[in-house]
Image (tube, rainbow, N blue to C red):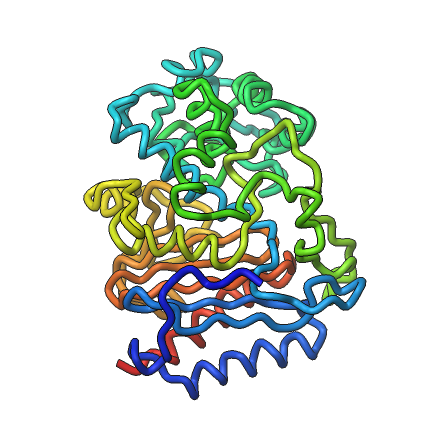
Length: 395
């Protein structure tokens, strides 16, 4: 078992209620007992100390193997904040400006066209301005995700197989550049393959693979020993799995195959990680860019990344929920109310397709993360977990 690598504290020492945290555990246990999710790993830290860290249920519902705190999860889009931090580390070195056009680094994106739909048919019109690197970081590039809908551009993405494990990051970028944009750059928040493209830019700027850059600049410095784009053979017995069929819809569940090293290192969704690994990343962010004597980012850069970069730009209300904007790699809370989940102004968060979720609340000096492998239940547990954690804040 991996020893937690953050300081420990009793809940009351950091202003949390042990009784209410037990209630949180009881609720998660009840959800597991009801057969809605195989197992969970939940972690809560406040004021720089780990106050709650529990595993429950099964790591593998097929074998019945028990969940352990150091089990490895496919974190999907929780990859994006890590890749965004890597990009901003290069920005701090003066390697690019946020206003730089994407085509400066990936020339194949020059002269992009935008698809305008007319009665099911599309007309291609010139982009009114170029995609910038800020657009990639805040998802206003005009790119999309093929699984987010059935719009003509999303069908083109699907037909082009924009997600393939046997392609390189360079090949994917070339494919995306050959397809029209879904929106004019800078006009709509459209959750997309922008961070995949950002990962390719990191490769171009450094001359290294994305995996090498993340390992050298973030994962090894922070001691994130189980975070990678694949799970090596020696760790296969720690890989958390989903139910083979969704417990509510009955549809087959197929998660990303991560037991072999892929050609494609998806900056938008390819990493696996553990609770304590990701907790160290979040503590670094909450600390203003440093952890255990290692500084990755300036405090001002962290503040800049976790500020709203959208202004009046809106889009995708199922993901960018009311009361939130979006920064550079994170959704950002703009109001104490409005949203149907609790939190503080300045809180930032994101999650992953298979059900993993985290948030950081600087005002409360708190972060929390829940790791599950239950794609169909992810929205429910993100809300439930946040409600129960905030209910445990005592002072």
